[in-house]
Image 1 (cartoon, rainbow, N blue to C red):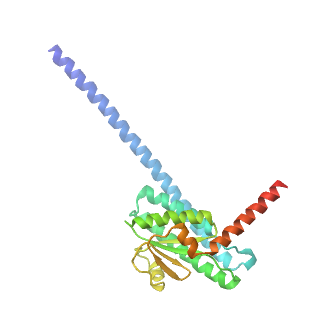
Image 2: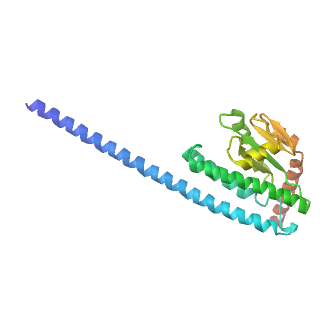
Image 3: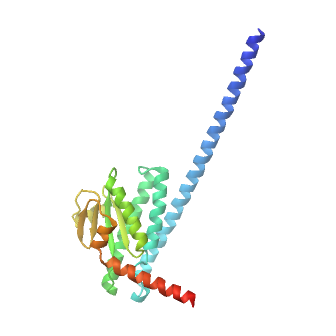
Length: 232
């Protein structure tokens, strides 16, 4: 009887320890899930504010004089929004309804920026350098081109890169695809009204856009002038 009593005590303590570990794991899991959800909601709220701010900028820029408008006026804002969207998509998944809505809203913002830059080009005789990029899911080369374009944009901050999901079900994106006769061969790039398909390296894109060399030279010149001024 005593042996059986000791065994029951072992079972009881084992059960109690297991219950404590299990309860603690559930508590920690819920805590971190709620924390991540709060972070994502915070990012969503910030994205909504940034989008509203950018839309207001569109209206202001349309009324501005040419001397007040630079080629890269909104490039940084769009890049920041894209980073936040990527983070949110990684947290919640690409099929999450809220992520899909944010991506659609961001795509519309990109198209508005593209149209605004064309207006500025006509009004101010400035030629923005841009790349329109279409991608799709389960496309290995699309992932590679995405890294190439990110690197390229970091090297040339005034380069405007507009990224769109080719299969996004939104009329403005479908119209952009139709107008430019983009085939369903991903990745696809539109550069200076010409369509390119398949993987393109940084070197390939620099050959297609020799203007980047001029942009780089101007950037280095400004940086040299700034360093000289600081030294004096």
